[in-house]
Image (cartoon, rainbow, N blue to C red; front, side, top):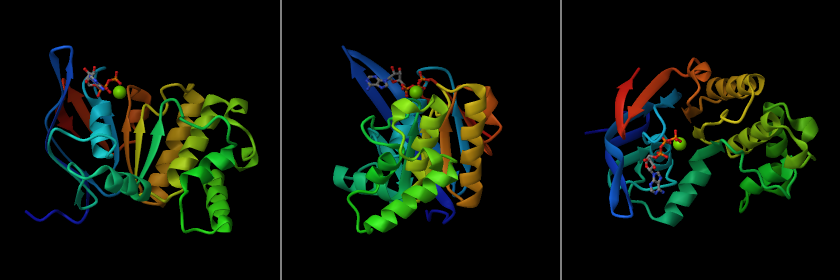
Length: 230
Ligand SMILES: Nc1ncnc2c1ncn2[C@@H]1O[C@H](COP(=O)(O)OP(=O)(O)OP(=O)(O)O)[C@@H](O)[C@H]1O
Ligand SMILES: [Mg+2]
């Protein structure tokens, strides 16, 4: 069956389980999901239902036990690690709950570090990092270290790092989980702007009802299964 050109991610019959001290945890059960290019997707569900596992499998951070994950036309479910890491670098940006910035690097250096190794000139790297910092309204803080920033500011730098490689897709796991309502609004508005201006496909896992309105697709999960897609 030919895949619609507009489809950015196709999850087909994906299963994943974890074995822990004799017990089997069915983290993903017969999951099927189709995400169109330019979608802004919210993934919701109770704790432990498999949201992070699904995000990790869709982004190539983890592999399913069975099934296919077609990311921008390529099945990554059986890809080798070097191919996966290249795909992640070329096509995917990540934002996590705890920012994952390198504490010994400034905001600017954290962003530039993502582009290495590269064929870009150091001037081009600098220009791209500056543009990304400007997009998240953090350019004036470019020489600051993570310890000198608030949670919301760190998350804006993390977002700049996620967009500096001009990814087709951004994956976020509880991106506003540690943020106050004002910082949450700012991060979500920035994601919305990126989604609209660059047509970046965005998938966000969230517990927060307050951010669901930013998505055009809401995926509800329960016990490793997809319950609804609206
Ligand atoms: N590395 C692992 N080893 C063993 N079990 C795991 C592992 N990762 C996740 N699990 C289990 O798989 C199930 C799904 O976990 P997952 O992290 O995807 O849930 P989640 O929906 O993201 O939960 P939360 O909202 O708490 O972040 C849970 O039962 C969890 O305990
Ligand atoms: Mg999770």
